[in-house]
Image (cartoon, rainbow, N blue to C red; front, side):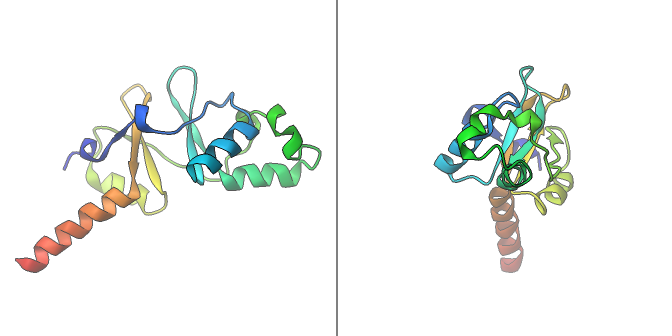
Length: 138
């Protein structure tokens, strides 16, 4: 199975730049009700994933920031506590499933590490469930 079948293309994905601010991240995450958002640099390359936890830890360890100054802190200056690994578009399904067990989504990159989209865990689970159902009927 080609993992491209599950791809949500970049133009349908909510993402941020490392040059975005904490306030922008908080507002976008709240609006979309996401707990994590991929970071894409100016060259279109995947630069990691920022999570709610990363933002909370930054606020906890920098009490002078507070929400009122969150517009002054760039995401490139916020430590990422989880390593959300991407897959290449030509990787096998087992590589995707292994990553998806620990991540809500898996970023997908091309041969030049340019971000091309994500694969959500729910689509993988749905696919596996349908395979299991078909096997049960056989």
